[in-house]
Every structure is written in C-alpha cells, then in structure tokens.
Length: 312
Image (cartoon, rainbow, N blue to C red; front, side):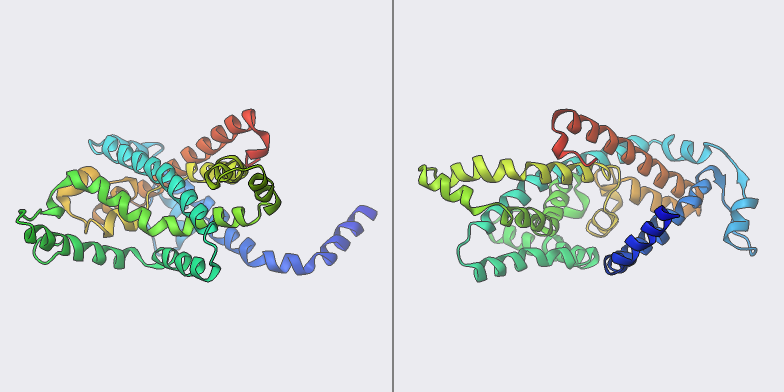
C-alpha cells in the first residue's frame, strides 16, 4: 500500500510535467500504437464492407504472405528498393555533412541579428509543401519557359527536355531535398554548439589554436554524440521515402520512373490502380520491420564502441 501511495504522490508532484507530455503521448497512442492492430491487414485480402472497419478485417480472407509476394515479385522490386536505399543513404550522409557545416558557420557569425536572419532564410524552405516546391522546380526546368533552358539558349546551347531525361534526376532530387531540409536539420547541431562551454574555446585561443583547429578539436568531437543519435534515427527510416519529393517534383513523369520510383510511390500507384489495401499495408509493415532491425543493429554496433553515443 505504501508503494501505491508513493506512486500516486509522485504523479501528483509531477502533474504539471505530465500535462505537458499528455498531447504528445496521446498523439503517439492514436497515430502510432493503436494503428498497429491493423497490421493484420497485410496478411489478408482486405475488402471493406458496410459492417464497419473491424468487421471487414475479421471477415476478409486470410492470404498469408501473398501480399508480400505481390509487392516484391514484380520486375520493379529491385528498382524501387535500390532507389529508396541509395537516395536515403545520400540524404543521410550528404545532409549530415552540410547540416553540421552550416551549423558551425552560423555559430561563428559574430553579429547575432545577422546570424538569425541567415538561419531564418535557410529554415523557411522546410515549411514549403512539396507541391509548391514541385512548381518551383518546374519553373526552372520547363522545356518551353523554364529559366534554366532560357539561360542555356542565351549561351547558344540547345535546350534540354529535363522531364524526359532520367540521367539528370538523381542529382536534381538530391539537390532539391538538401535545399529544403539542410537548414531545418542544422538547428539541432546549432543548439548543441551553443551549449558547448565557451571556456574551452578561450583556453584554445590562449594556446594559439586557429579557428579551424578549434572547430576540429573542440566543436566536432563534442558534436559526435548528437551526430550519432541523429544518424541512428535516420537509419531507422532508410526504407521510407519522402512521397512528395519523388511524386510531386518529377510531376509523375513515366519516363523518369527508373530513377524516381521508390517504395512509397510504387505502393501509391498500385493502390490507385488495383485498390489492394493489403498490399500497401504489407509494404508499410516491411518498411517498419526493416527499419526496426536496422536501428537495433546500428545501435548495438555504436554501443559496442562508444556506449555514451548510443540511443539505448
């Protein structure tokens, strides 16, 4: 009884903090944990009936692994898996380097008002929807009135049919993603840099260390734990693709599918044409399971070499 009383007493003492956590906890409950019961649809031939969602799940035919076979037995299975994996690897590692570099540069600007102006300008693209970014990209790459083709014409170079030429799009997609995401991702590293004890830099200056030596020997080593954690979290979503980037920016051009088709866009097109909800659920379950395994494995490797930098 004493333990129970102590438990409720601790809850009462922490009631303000618990109320602050409540919205986030409810969000995870309704959008992350309760939907897990629906993963059974991945193993069923789901057909919605008038009896309701749960009755439809119960009454749908059990098909086992057929939805997974349908997803990965096609000729596109290798292409969509390759594209999803390679793009995300590029996003993780190039984005990490640029985010850290940008955070270091912003932290070194002595005029804080100017630094906040730069930070806001680099932060804003993150809040633009992919639909708007897709139109921005089209205004540059349009074959008729695109800004880039007009510049090429002014130099006497033939215009390029960007939306019919797949070889350019891996670079275009990576560039667009970095433009949109790097400013936002740098905020975490900038906050970590602001938390570094300034006396370390003062001691280094007294010892005659240059600015580059201070960054290399103080800033980067102290950013190592947060860099590791952010990379581990990103690895967990390595089989997820940003649907808006790969669907809206290339404008769903069929000639570009070899380099723009990823698991998420493939599932969307399959769902739109066949209506197979079970197949899309199977894809989501596959992405989640693989992401979970990758996070556990990566965390185990990091923990083995540096326990303080691991997630858990």
